[in-house]
Length: 244
Ligand SMILES: C[S@@+](CC[C@H](N)C(=O)[O-])C[C@H]1O[C@@H](n2cnc3c(N)ncnc32)[C@H](O)[C@@H]1O
Image (cartoon, rainbow, N blue to C red; front, top):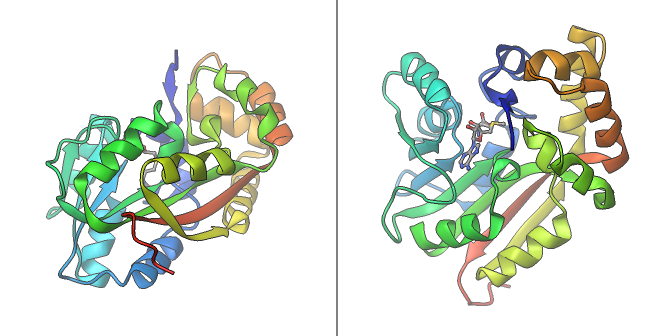
């Protein structure tokens, strides 16, 4: 049972800015270039938060996108901030769109929050057109043997769901995706952590403030350190074809 949504916290917004993730739009731009997305394409941002990426894709690249997120609070903030974006309430486990609607799906720092990764992959595959792209940027454990201890905590933060990259790759392959790019981007996570420590004094203090529940920030930080968190970008493509 998870009690507090760290990503809805004002403290989280204060340190990350309009995107609730490390690296701002650097990896969004990299994915647009890698997948050669154009204004002809229709994209879904899964776990869109306040809709910053939906807005950015249109403003910077002329690409139409729709955001899907379960948090009414973040949707309301986003709809107020950006007047012309489309954000829909929904979850990765049950995407509220029909089959083969999108050329690409972005999931930026959100898969780690979803309870059933296999089901999400199945849903993303369903709404993607053939040859469609699945762009995942997220946190992972360089030392995954301690991630079970994170799952026992009742915090709803992506850091609680650090991916095991080997398992994620297997799940994508099983779901009919081929991995086209996988890169470590841990410097972006490190930069965000440095910023947090400058602003709050320590990661433990930040977690106590951002979660506003009975979580022991020091204990959470201790387990996180054991897992050695990193950040990655993975781009997968739907279909059986061999793209090499
Ligand atoms: C760390 S924030 C990232 C938001 C956005 N992608 C960004 O980078 O600004 C994680 C987002 O995932 C959303 N989320 C949580 N559980 C989800 C689920 N089951 N399906 C889709 N989105 C989910 C949260 O509401 C939150 O907006």
